[in-house]
Every structure is written in C-alpha cells, then in structure tokens.
Image (cartoon, rainbow, N blue to C red; front, side, top):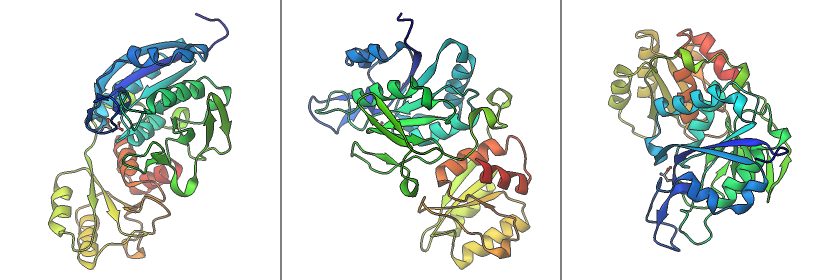
Amino acid sequence: MKECLKNILIIGTGGTIAGTGTTGITCHYEPGKLKLNNLIDKIPDIKSLANINYIDMFNIDSCDMSFEKISQISKYINNNIDKYDGFVVTHGTDTLEETAYFLNLVIKTEKPVVLTGAMRPSTSLSNDGCLNLYQAVALASHEESKSKGVLIAFGDSIYSARDVQKTSTYKTNAFNQKDLGCLGFIRDNKIYFYNISNKVHTVNTEFDINNIQKFPKVEIVYFYMNSDIKILKFIAQNSDGIIISCAGCGTVSTDWFEEIKNLVFEKNKIIVFSSKINNGLVNINKKFENNIICANNLSTEKSRILLTLALTKTHDISKIQEFFDKY
Ligand code: GLU
C-alpha cells in the first residue's frame, strides 16, 4: 500500500460496465457478468491513482436495483467511512441516477462518493467502462470532491446526484444535467470543477437509513393525451403517495384535474406534481390551495425517491413541500 495515495473502496453492483457479449459488438450483451477484479486488471494505471480496495456487492442489471439493495450499499458506506478516503460505486446506467440521489440523501459523510458505469460492455470495441472507472477513482481521490454530495463521473464529465439524468439510450456521452449543464470535466485523471449543487445533501439531511424498517409505497403515474383515469384511480388505491408526471409545467386534462381534486380533498392522498419534460419548473394550479406538492425542477423518478424518504418522516404536506424545496 502506498502511503501517499488515498484509499478508495470500489463497490460493484453490475450493469453494462460489468457486461460481456460478442467481441467487438456494442449491443446484444449481458450486463452484470464481470467481477470488479477483472475490470480493475484491465486498467493497470488505476493503481497509481489510489490504493484500490473493492467489494462485489451485487452483479445485476440495474433495472433490478431496489430500495433494499440501495439501503445495503448506503449502510455499507456509512459503516466503513473511517476506513477509506473515498468511495466509487459501479452501476448500470438505467437507474444510476435514482441510486445516486437516494445515496445523496442518506449517506453520512463529506468524503467523496462517486457513481459510474458504462454504455458499452467490456467486450465491445472502444468500451467506455475502463476510462469511466479510472476517472471515477480520480474524482473520488480528489480533495475538491469533498462535501459536494454524491457525484457521477461519466463520459469525461462530473455531475451532481441531484440533477443528473440519463439522456441517451446508447451514446457514451449518455448523461447530463439538461438546463444545469454539469459540475465539471475530467480529462484523463485531471479534475476541473466549475459548479456545485446548492441543494442540501448527505450529512445535512434528516434521513437516517438505519431507522427505516419499511419503505412507503410511492408510485408514478404518467399523464398523456387521453390517458385513462382508471390508471390514476388504481394507483391511488394501491400506494401511500403518488408522483404525477404531468404535461408541460404541471398540467393535466380536465377529468384528471377533477379526479386529483377528489383524491386530495376527499381522500387525503399525498400527491406530487412533477413534469414528464424533466427539465424546467413545475407550477401548481391555485385551485389546489397548497394541497399538492410541487417537485419544482426535481425529475419524476427522483421525486419518487424523495417522497418515499419523506413519508418515513412525516405526512404533513407543508413539511414535505419544504423537503422538495430543500433537497
Ligand atoms: N439495463 C442495464 C443496466 O442498467 C444495462 C444498461 C447499462 O448499464 O448501461 O444495468
């Protein structure tokens, strides 16, 4: 172990970065096949960046990630904070942003926690996983990465867990923060920060993963032209909270509007309005008289994460709105 280098723990969870398939081909592969040592061995120079430790926690397609599995990652990091200087989590890209935001709300450290993944399997031509993992370790080892919340290293860029979104189904430059750009760039192992997220995270949140026995059931309902009101009614009967992915800046049809009024005023349902645009702000119709929570610019999927954690603390609408304004 080199004394001057930071001790970094890489936690493997699977995804395309650990995927294998036909040599040279980027599609038709299976995610979650390689163990971390196979990946790390492909990047010899990674050991000059940091003392590398690793644990293969899962090896799954990230579509099979769950709150229980993310809790396991969170608890592992929280219980091993003193042993390492920074953490990297390898993850499938499909739900990477959801895990990142969840961790951002429950991890209790100012030390860097960085997620990364890949768009091309390890067996493809020009696979991106090796460079992404190398850069994630560089970012997790960097002094300036402290106290910035959970970060994402992907495609030579740095993103915040609060705002990152997957925006391409196949390109290696698959993530961005839409209107908000990115936090910075990575060139080889050089880190360049330009922005930070103003939102509260990690050590300053009130969410404690150790005190959550059971996660409330929060579901997303997607509004689109002629969408069947029965879907909304079904979800309302089978959930503790609902995120409505509205059109535009928070709009729905007349029949949805009437049903939402009924759910809120007659059935005391907890409803958050987000937008299917996942960019820009959401407005709430004044006729709801502050009985609907506004996601502001938080994405639909991340609104679900936040409402799930919020409902472990309170059912008070104004308090939950404060959470949405703060986180
Ligand atoms: N669906 C897989 C996953 O999220 C593959 C996508 C990826 O990692 O890029 O794990």
